[in-house]
Image 1: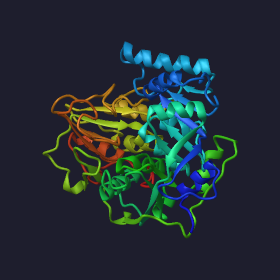
Image 2 (image 1 turned 120 degrees about the vertical axis):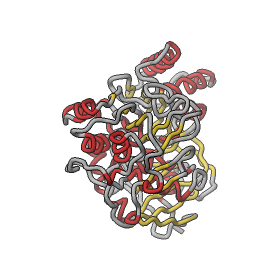
Image 3 (image 1 turned 90 degrees about the vertical axis):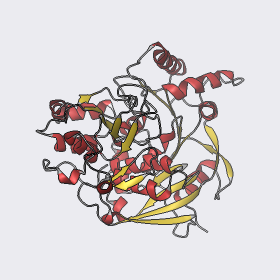
Image 4 (image 1 turned 180 degrees about the vertical axis):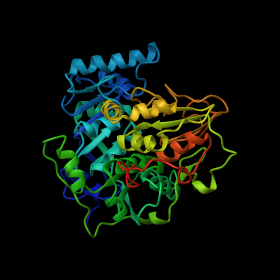
Length: 435
């Protein structure tokens, strides 16, 4: 009996010929990630581990300041300072401070720190993002991250795998975000709890790297332990442009056993939107859009949709237009590199001319911590990945999740809007197979 892609990666990192769902294993890690919030707790735990004075490998740890950047108060500044001092003390090579990094899940692939066949753990639930590159990647609590800092290994229960098969070509204004929203709606927020989502089909084969990132990122929204794509020529080319270290490309065996197989016809999809207050409350935009849903804030960015492809889509829709009155539009590029590329292409000027506020790269608005929180009774449409009560600020606010195109269209009209009804500049640099 063959193994799934996740099982093959875990078996190799455990030094075993095979593993099976439900098996408890110790696995060696290729990279351990933490941000200033998770790092602060992990560092404290590490200090209490008897005999633990050094991390296992200073080249295999990444620390990224991205949740409160720049620091919003003395407390958040202290967290960033603690991580910075730890990075210096441990001589950690991959430390990304304000102005030299951005959102952790955007920065690590950009910097060549993620490769096919690797095992990556991080102190953030969206660490599953790196499954876009054919890696096993999962989020863990800070205590587990502290142990990984010291030992270079983690214990895991091998997850059963769900095979997702996507067919058909996306229609107008349908993007990877729409495809993944539909997937979460299909599975439910707990429908893949502690499972591996393995993405297959002609549709995902045609997706851009950033489109795959968007889909892998939101595996956790269905409760999954990880989401994973096979590494194809597109993936390998992307990684080799950024690193020369060796890596192993794994493939699922043809006779691998899956717990479930779910098929989705992408050709039948229109733009999707997740309504309050769960990411699986997903509907076609035609069922939601209308004059009775004005918005107070549009947010574009996050580890789900903060890439240059996303900003290009938004800029094409907003070019020559102004955002609706009585509305704020906040844009957070995913990283400093994305910010600079957007500046070079004139995208930032287009966004500013339309009335958008462009922030420093960071996660703050997504989790309601900084630079874009919501007040009582406000309604937002956002490219982020979660819309639970209180996620972006007030528990009395409402959050709708959608693609960058749908969010940009809503910015123009001031209400939740189907992007297919607007006139927009030709999208020469973006395609429906982007994010």
